[in-house]
Image (cartoon, rainbow, N blue to C red; front, side):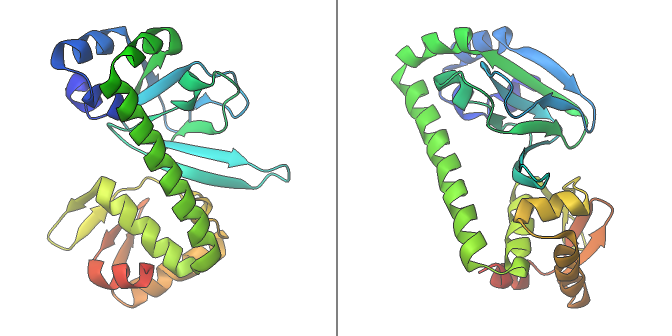
Length: 224
């Protein structure tokens, strides 16, 4: 099961079966409890991580104490890959949103793989997707209002973590209201108001650290 999930990461998906299995054998599993920090912004970085179970949040803290969430990642996704190309300080803090397990790969084990063009291209593609998401997030902060950003964030979480039920799409995001606000770059009060409005219109139902999306199309229209 672990190998099957890890193979979904861009790095391992580019390898043949034998190479991927050999690489997984070199990776070190790390168990994390909810709220446990894996690394802190500014820590030295020399490894990437692939998530097997659970969710990880990547965030940054401003000098005045405000926090911003850069991403919420789940099984099969990887993070920390910048440290393999530029082994400098970490640019974000990684914290477990829910209990789970990640697997680390050090720079020493990774560098020899760059001789394989498919691996290099796969990682460049992954970095390109990360940059594109960053650009989209910056554009949303400029051009979208808070309800639009909340709708878009919920749809993205639904795409990656949602599960179809009889009522709609259950999205167990495991985020507190404050964390959801940090993800969309707004105050908790403003985000709560947007969620209450969506619920009042019958677009979704609020759950504990989750939502059930009842009308995906209406939410999608609001996200535009």
